[in-house]
Image (cartoon, helix red, strand yellow):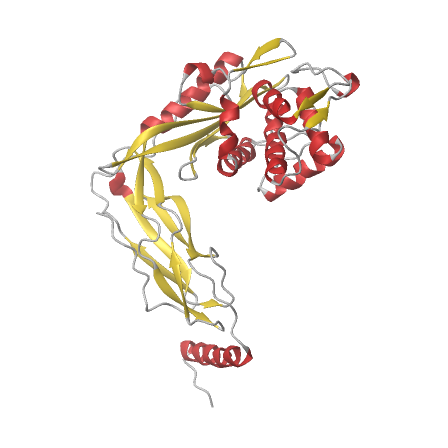
Length: 405
């Protein structure tokens, strides 16, 4: 029942808004957004990672101590170093000295003994081990101080604007601050950028130096769909959790997809409550929302004029299927709107964002999806740019209702 996008050829000079009503809002559409169950923690957020939508949150921008959730950034930078071949999984790394390791979780590295990056990753991810975090920080950046600088630079690059790190372990420090919203961004980037490492977060136990220890993420035992991420604890703020799960869900009448959710909780009173509330949020998201495919990738692609380029037009498209989460059984509340410029100036890069699809459920905007260029167009030569400059000048005069003297 969804209509293919038709990018109008009669566009306004600056911004074109094409409204598409997919299904008329019925008179019975009076339902509100699903009400989240009561969560026994002050700060939390639930994201549908399949679409990128935030489904529910509470105090997500309030300052928290990230505690061992900081190690998610340590893992992110370790994965990045592996991808860039700065380190190798089989590389031997020196263990930190006893004085370098703060009190708390450990994999019990022996000072002066080398250990592989692979084993350190398991100690970091499965156990949240401080000694593993410090060893990896020194292996990646040469020193923990340099590694912390990379942590903070990366946080800013990822849009974690309310976060700062003081160490690789997350042990208490005045400069170790974050928010649930920022931790959610980090968790989502970990999953999206490093899916090949996600399985490392689902290990229930790890044995090193003859010592067997278990993962503190209890949901790995309670729900088979859970496959990560990490836990944390602050003496002053309680227990924290970043958890993700994937479950199959129908998509239309024939397709099925693996839908993924992420929940982040901070300030739970006990370890048991942390697990229970995390599962409560995941179940709420999976049970109260449907996934709809509004458009397939490349569906409804259209041309947009390009000035000062080697070609006069560029093709626009959705690079991926346009998916949206909506309250279960309430697809009739969906409407969409396209916003994009009436023309582009060369050069145009493949994948360049040139507009957006805005999606409403009732009167609430619930999602935005970028529209991008499906091809590259180089700048024209001097003569071509000059001709198009005159065309743009004439176009501007025409749109203003003036005529040249």
